[in-house]
Amino acid sequence: MLRQGIYRLAINNTRHKNKTVLPASSSILSSSSTSAQPPTSPPSILRTMSTNIPPLKPWPKPMLESRGDYRAESHLETHIGGPLYSQQSSLPKLPIPSISDTLSRFLPTALPLAKSVEEAETLKEAVKRFEAEGAGELQKRLAERKEGEMKESSWLQFWWNTLGYLQVRDPVVVNVSYFFHFSDDGTLPEHTSSSSTHGTLRAATLLYNTAHFRRLVATGALPHEAIGRKEPKTPLCSVAYKYMFNACRIPRKNEDTYRIYDPSLHSHVIVAVGGRFYSLDFVEKDGSGEPLPLEVIEARLAKCVELSKKSGGGDLPLLGYLTSDNRDTWAEAREELIRVGGVKMEEALKVLESGAVLICLDEEEPVSKKQASEIFWTGGLKSGHNRWFDKSIQLVCTKNGKAGMNGEHSMMDGMPVVGYCDFITKRSYNDVLVESSAKSCGGYESADDNVKDIFAECAGELTSTGSNVASHVEKSKSNFDNLISSHELQVQSFQGYGSNAIKKMGYSPDAYVQMAMQLATYRLW
View 1 (cartoon, rainbow, N blue to C red):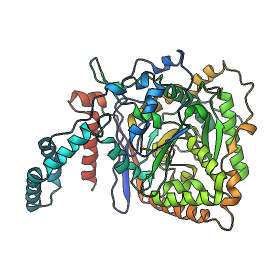
View 2: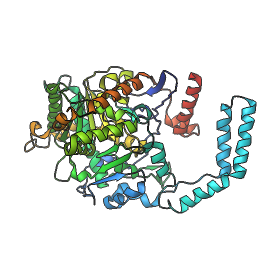
View 3: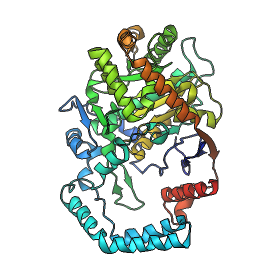
View 4: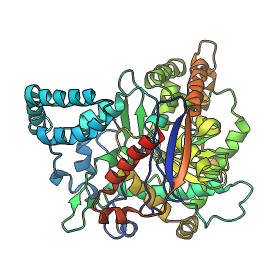
């Protein structure tokens, strides 16, 4: 569960050895962004699960490929309906700050960076010229955009999604993706069966809880979020929830896209073990979105581990490395995958992209927060191949039951994900075991029949004489190793005070931590 007053702090430097410093928590950590505590929702989302939730409504199209403009997929909000999207039409619009306000805030921020009196004076003169000569026309264009083309949306969102994410060519790992570190689950049994590990039990628990949350999102039954101390509170936008499940970023030359799949058509998740990727069903196929019994999910996860050990890696290249590379490089590699793998590869990629989430079962057994954080952030040099960094949500479970989450950031900001992680960690293994015990485990496909190795049928083509896939993987692995090795991560647990104390000081907790990041950067470098 989330704890009040724990924030994430990331400080990156462009020197030879980059250092990232994180205040740690046994609850949730994030490596590449700070975020405030989750906004308030009605008293208990869990209570919503006991009410009559409608079945998942099929979408007008089985898949939508977003190019960064939320308006293109907004019809789904009306189609899905429910409390989650009930406030979308009444959201406050993003304002455009006045020129004078912008410049009055800019100068005090920029002047301390000036290295001389002369440079400071030059900056002041440049600001005066800008206000007198060019700012008015630019401000007019912004206002016209806000009241014209983007009247029904945010004037900033398309630029934010494309210029800030989809067009960025740097690897998403380290530079964009963020992670959370979950509290340990103290209810996991001390000893496990020969076919299970603490990692598979933890993973099954998280998937079971994920199924419940996904059901609330996909039906619109999840209460919308709101902020503020007084009623009526200010509703928050729910647009990001459409990109949370059954979603995947797609590498393209110059600018990526983002695919979202109809959750009513896909009952599976993706499981990564030893660099191999498997699919398994984790919810009912009757359209309800209800989770399968915990025992069934556990058995299927154990089967993934068994198949991975039998394959020993096999002849299949470690394709996960490709997703960690420069976006244009990965786009070229994806084209090569489809060229040599043909229709079978296209179908395999579709299965991976359309999975509700991806769960990574790592063989490592971290003890310290630092060790665990390195695994959840990038996978490190030992587990980096066991990721598909384009998936919207990757849940990571280590062999000894440590758990976290790695998120792809491009179409989905932090607050909905914080709510999701809070939800799936609130109920322990024992809680889920008790609830699930009321369900019969009979009538379900065996793990042998249900678990599929996604890329197994493409192995021959990928390793054929005319294939360049192995070369692409080798280069991406080298680039990944260099990227990871050039960064250092340290974890600092701060328990002195939290968000409530910061608010009493009269500051926004998020802004306060942003300032702490700048101060820490100044003191370090």
